[in-house]
Length: 245
Image (cartoon, rainbow, N blue to C red; front, side, top):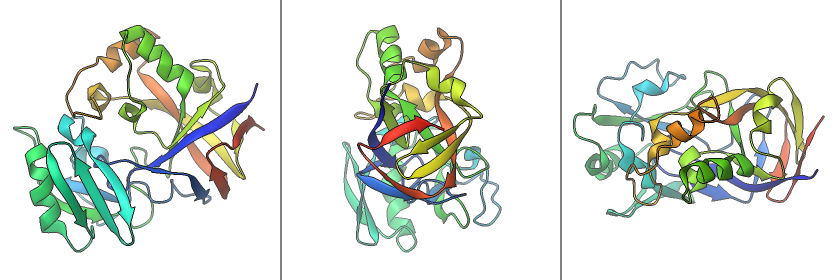
């Protein structure tokens, strides 16, 4: 059985845009380079400087589904943000805070805490785990969710970092506690990724249109993908092999 990396994704601003890369150099004890470097704190946030805090302190697609349709492209030291309902915005996240808040405000759902500022991570990306994690996603498991719902789904509902093919559905959930060689890097599978309402939103439109959580529960859980920690750094490219150690 040959397992192959099919795509690599990062999300420079947590919950506000995805970006594909062809290769990445993983660093021990760090999350995906360029992933969740910033997060959008809302007016009710309780922050600890620029240190990691729980995701409930930030605006997310779980509460404002239109955010799911944002895409991102890194251009030199700036980010180009795109959304089907808005004109593109090019910003330096550290310098253009007001412009960003004005741009994203129309995408916020009524009654949600308003975004107030971008926070840059100091030590680790603002992932949903308190330790520096990446998510590893199995295409076969995604196809099982599609089959359960009877419709095609974008893989971007899961906002994963590393996608691979070649493994039967859901077998990755049994990898917790195992080590994997991923390209030139070595990673340890730490835990499953429990999913939230964000996955019910269409990444093309930002509209909630699929009961992904209900579909997952038919398999006896609400998990999709596993969270991994980098234990040995190295280059990972699309097309590289993934193997158990």
